[in-house]
Length: 204
Length: 204
DNA sequence: TAGATTGTTAATCGATTAACAATC
DNA sequence: TAGATTGTTAATCGATTAACAATC
Image 1: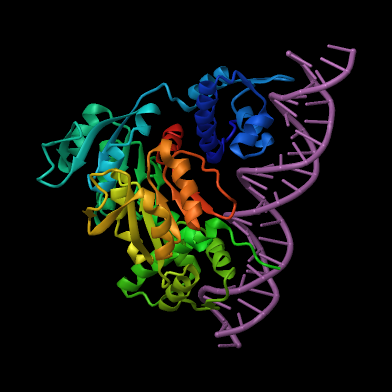
Image 2: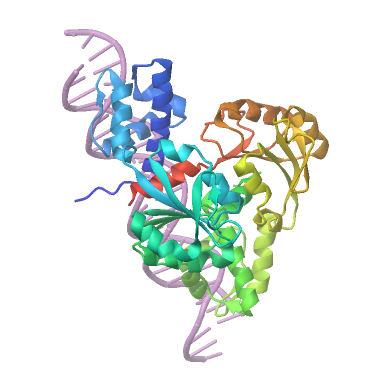
């Protein structure tokens, strides 16, 4: 009977990881679920429940060892393991992602970047050689790239995504507002910036 | 007894809106909840439930008028009303957001942009005059800006956010991985790109 | 009228929280 | 041992779905 782990639990695990790093910096050696949950502004029950999906990491009466818990969460999230990613579409957003430091510390390695503009193809951009998007399939295959960040214009999104599928990409982080239709085998996460803003504004 | 409308319902409303535009382009005049839900890959019950929070927009036996439904949803989301936003921090991500066409069509008007770099302050960037971040408070107040996009480096996030609060900003779309601590009155939406990617990779 | 499809109620599912026995 | 805090079970909350009476 395989436990199904909620997506939200995984998201919170990353939050826990970040704060454990911070606590370590501060020299905090040990913390109870109650104090940690207070810092994170969640309930202590939720924190313990989230951890319990993966094992027992605390000590009754004493709480959690910050260093040990950090390591356990790193292991769970696979932060030690490297994942090869490519960025497809080097408009402003693609460039922003390319320059984003946060990815590297979580084990993501930008292995290739693609565009369709002759002004970019073949040139070095922030130290990365830009490939023609036509070469997506061989480049992804040769480099065993698993994850693609899709930052092309909406019109091109579906067709490029289809090509990613053919190239053997396993997961796509989709920044376009297009609902991609691909095989169920590919994991897709949609990041819709306009939707985030609109939701926020609605609740004003 | 005020009905509480789930945040997810609002998110889906925007999805409905986009597909209604698309259906209109195609010349579809009418659609049933079943066919529309099929297109959106959600359940028909959910679609009808979402709409029912706001009123009755369909006709039994006949479905929904595409044009009328689009207008109703636009009214609900306030897509007709303009909202003034500012972008604070003009690194790659700030620039990407500045160039993002999708906002304008949803009624967001970029009214000011801010940075702390002498190379940017006072210059025009993509047609917008860049202000010194020190002037945030007067500029926001004078222009009655309601929403701020926070794209500064992590280290500066909390302090800049505090200043946004003092300036009377009502909602912040926070692109930094920092948990902002501000008065409860300010609406905060966190967009954590690294977390999105990490979550995706975990589920591989 | 007969067929289709809405709007809504009740049932289900899943995630969060409260409570507490186990135990360090 | 006594106090503190975990890990887990059961209760609660909220959101999704199924079902169907209302009705165009």
